[in-house]
Length: 297
Image (cartoon, rainbow, N blue to C red; front, top):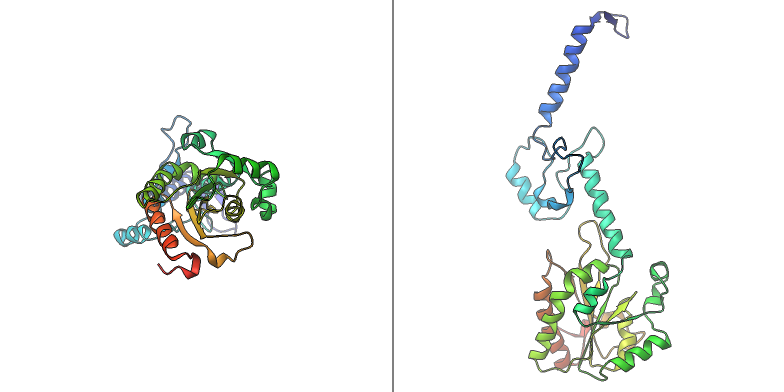
């Protein structure tokens, strides 16, 4: 059997056509042989978890001219470098990793902090006037205040007028609390005790924004208020925590009065190290009686 070309020219028989197809497939296979993606022929129907390998270790560029330089560049940034393409589109592995990271970020925002994490760290829980996650995200102001019931709980369970009051809040990443609090909280408390400061009763705020620390300051009257809170997650990390500190804060205070330590997680500032660093900053605040831009570190 033979086939006519579309332009009506020379014919190609079936055998030659099959040989041409085999050759094209072979060339495509050879071209992509060095791309670092694992096939699933031996996966027994199970797809490999592509998130187990760090992006800095994955290079999908076939036959790079300078592989060593490429890998050094990837170590210097969490950006998605060397993803390659399938025609004009992303490769399947790249798209799946993007969607997996996006899903993890969504989970960090919408999941709640595990009760076992709070119990393990002796944190009782109160919640702001945000009724649920939807209101918390759509109306940020509701995450800054407490109703009468929760205000009463704080007053009854906490030491009043300590030198330092520590608060933990979910913020925009419940995952960051679960990943970091076990290390940062003991380190911070140990550091503050080492300086001889009196520490208030630590507790957890559900649906808490940074501004909730100001309401707590007015309720308990500490010298310094410290809030450990989940950062807004992204496609690079969904477990990063921030720490905001104020000296003699109050509701409606300018943001410039806050001192911040951010990017607290295993690939940023390690939580145990961050706890010690925060204790040092609190010491300066108490000595100089200022925070924010007025505190010269």
